[in-house]
Amino acid sequence: MIRINLLPFRATRKKENIRRQVFIFVSMFVLIALVLVYYNMMLAGKIDTLEAKVNSTKKELIEVQKKAREVDRIKKEIATLEKKMNIISTLERNRTVPMEFLVAMSELIVEKKMWLTRMDIGAGSVTMDGLALDNKTVAVFLQRLEEAPLFNGVNLKKITQSDKTGISLKQFNVECRRAPLG
Image (cartoon, rainbow, N blue to C red; front, top):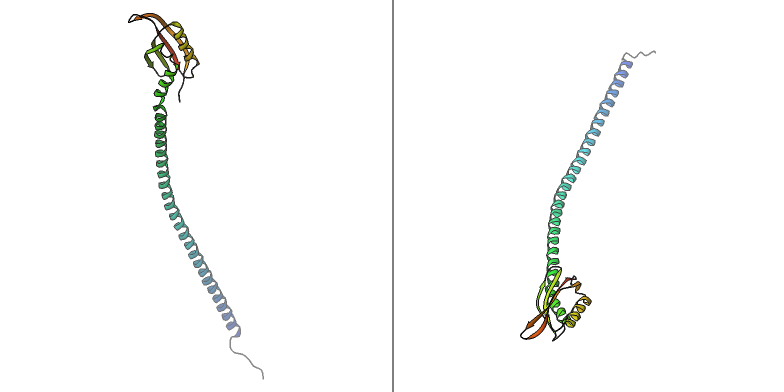
């Protein structure tokens, strides 16, 4: 016997295909939406991490700038202290210069034949007045001055005859440039 299917077979198959396609479309849409949500959350996490790094870097920068200002202040203090130390060492070095100068001068004087009556020590020059028994003593004194490392350009300004308590003496004036000491 011949069988005839009275059910709409093709229409049911078509509906089933349409339902399957709609399900696949909706599933793909949901899957894409889930992937996009996951990717968005991942990017948001990266953004939060980077913002946290930026904030911590800014805090570190502020701290480093504070330390740099402190270092600059300390460097200025060190420079000031070095200047003060240089001044102190210069003063300490120059403290004994006048005494050493006088000791050196006492070695240049001809003993028991001459006397210095005045000595004026300027920044770069020395002027001396004195008395001597004779011209030869003055000449020896001038020669010693020229040979001494303390002086440059020794110049006899004047020499005159003077009577002091009945003794005939030579009164002289010498000017010379002082060599740098220390």
